[in-house]
Image (cartoon, rainbow, N blue to C red; front, side, top):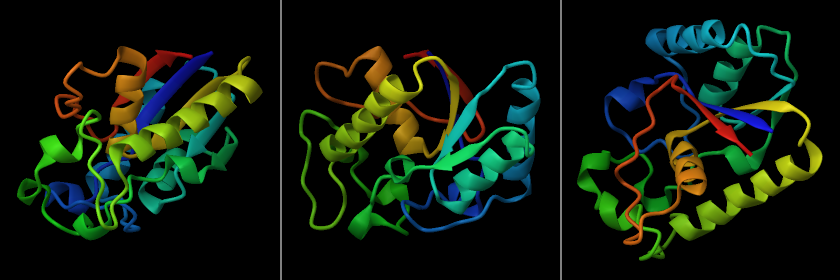
Length: 177
């Protein structure tokens, strides 16, 4: 099964390096252009279905890519990592090595652990394998989910550090599931 993954287009919060998590932020003009560019790059790919996070920035990206021609299914498992107490903060003020280390799997008061996030995405992938194995699927989602997918397909480093991967807004990644 061919799987395409697109991180949502840019938001003003991305520019400000804000931990958006489950804030329902909107695409800015550049983000809309990034979604259109992804649509144009995928114009020759026969995508059967798009799965999207229900958050506006990801869903609007899906709608632009779909152009009304591809069914879109929202799935809560594709929503951003729950940043809990870190939501709305500048990401430069957070220990990202700790936050994104699979081996440490640090538990927080409110924020979702990286292990729980990984398991959420594995659950989604199992559903895709079971129910959509003969389809070409596109996912529109968030940077943290893109990160988990990258390490799912490429392997988690032995030290658990998942910070080296960075998802660019509007970037298309391709995997074989």
